Length: 151
Image 1 (cartoon, rainbow, N blue to C red):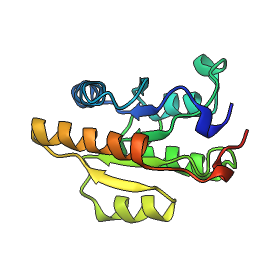
Image 2 (cartoon, rainbow, N blue to C red):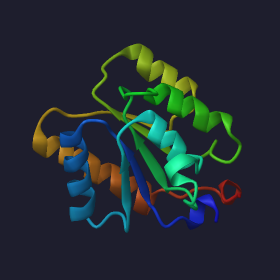
Image 3 (spheres, one colour):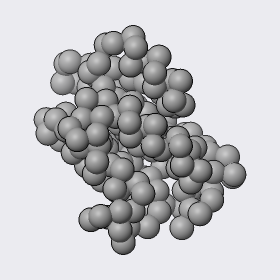
């Protein structure tokens, strides 16, 4: 299976259950993904994306990864670094969705090749709208080049 043929459209990497539930609700309400998978830490994200451990029978890749930065076990910057270091996942679209307002996080993630950096709004409706708009763009509007479709 290739990056562009995946069944899972979105992987949400988020440790805060409230933010995760709100994001999942917004994506499903907008019918923006036929499947959204949620992992709660960076180690699980790496296992999921590299088909290891509990995910060793997993096939394919999501259309986009929504990645928080402040994660237990392995932080989001290390997840991004690992994705960009691997030839198979190097061009997988990754959107940082974080509460971090640190300029160094913004700069570091762009140096590592993040596709987008979005600060989580604090207000419930604004957060839901932001996630819906992200899903709309990355799942329905954005196109990836054919060379991303590799084993």
